[in-house]
Image (tube, rainbow, N blue to C red; front, side, top):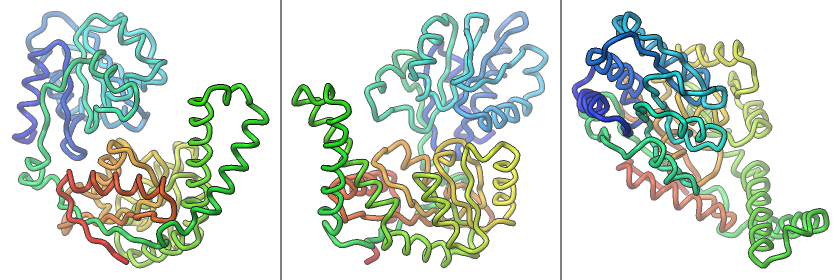
Length: 371
């Protein structure tokens, strides 16, 4: 246990409902396990506890954290589930919600509403960016404690971040071709799903979706200049442990094929193959790993020192989660290097880039523009 973790533990134990917000690398699972251990000491009888996480890999991490407290097994039975596979919670005495922003998912929220006992949330980013943001707090309670990033830096548990913003395209360079593709897609969608265009609002929403999909495909997934720079950066960092986050499996495969001795990892790859690749990357045997959204949460690879954000997006949540992958402490690591793109080629993509840069500034990252 680290000094900055104890206040979080104490506040969880003292409340019925509440959320601890803590950065990636702060040891959220250890905080949760320690809180269970402390809570059990004030309880009588054997307890039934549910630990809910977003992925199977996260449930494995939670199980390991709980095993650090042998007395838990003497006083309770802890069951580990994913949000998607959790059943009724009525039989449990305590529920831990890891990456608790997922608790607002329509398939899970009713199960949590039916549960009357204490519930604790853990997340680096409990504030969702969609309409379900308030539901997270309605279901679990308020943020009762926030572990400051400075505490992790001071404790040597978080590296400093250096962000390099690249501009492979000129401003508005792909506006015309993206507009043409979006207009064609919108016309086709209107032909097939005319009822979605009945109201002005509906028509505007459909057009926005078509523009975004065209911008993503042409501006990100099929952008030769951008791809060439991503490959160049990956090769330049060939001797580092480099994580490249991609927005689609197909895009990741195309990029990885151009980077010697690299691999791509994604959820549907299969558990054994996925774990084998992550193990090889974690020990330094594999230097360059392309990964899809499975790297957004719960990926613990302290050796990773360089991140290339080949995907796009404006989510503050994902920006924090993804950059945190290269800020875990590791011998010899002073900085985590992050490469991102200004994406000037289209106004949609440029706006999202500006939002990511604003998130970097709010986190105190060192930012440098590269022409």
